[in-house]
Length: 163
Image 1 (cartoon, rainbow, N blue to C red):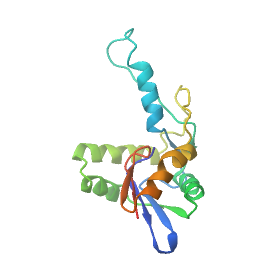
Image 2 (image 1 turned 45 degrees about the horizontal axis):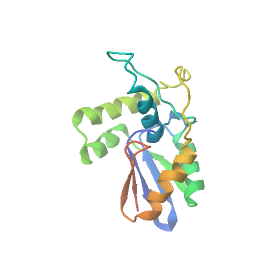
Image 3 (image 1 turned 180 degrees about the horizontal axis):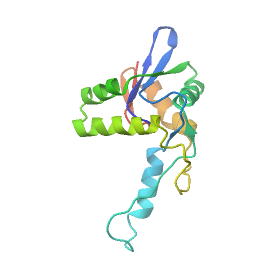
């Protein structure tokens, strides 16, 4: 799901989801379990060789503002989205051990998303089963409830939960 960021608990129970993406522009999401299911179907197929790509897209196209609302509903506490600069996003990725190339790739991806790469509609792909809300119920909520430290939310790549 979208680029590098963090969900930070503030005093009074308020959390902020921090990304470099525009808050009102829809993003594509996909749960890691749906990526794994697609791979498990494709990898045993010996009928192809070489390289190809297969779009794996979740059922939701939600903006970061929409995602924050879903997180608020599921976590039963207010979550608000706050946009940061792509430079700060890159610095956060580097600080967490990303390579320069990986951090720059994140910047390039976020810039393309902010510039409307998804505005033309979805590529021809069957949408996967796991909604962002379902991922929040199954993965995010248990992770938040089970720890007081930092949890990496893998279905939202790079999103860091801290409390």
